[in-house]
Length: 83
Image (tube, rainbow, N blue to C red; front, top):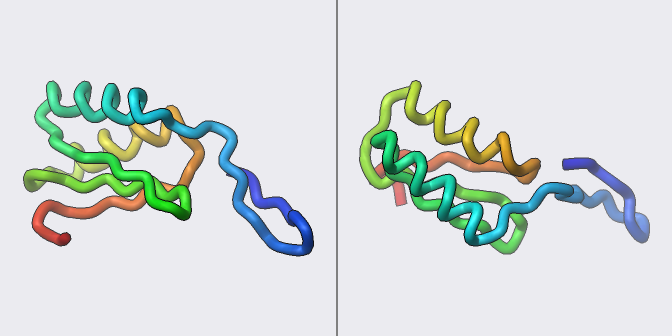
């Protein structure tokens, strides 16, 4: 992500967005590894990762890294049961 000034406003510009298919593909791969997360991209282009079951720190890092490897948008992690 790069910060730019557009029409006098500071704007974060995402250069590598994830398609719905890519989000599902990454989530499915993580599920095979025992990490169940649901990715949700909000209107501000923040990718929220909602853990569906409790995870270890190692699993959380693995999930965050899997998505961060393919996109430069902001990513927010949400523990299971925190909705």
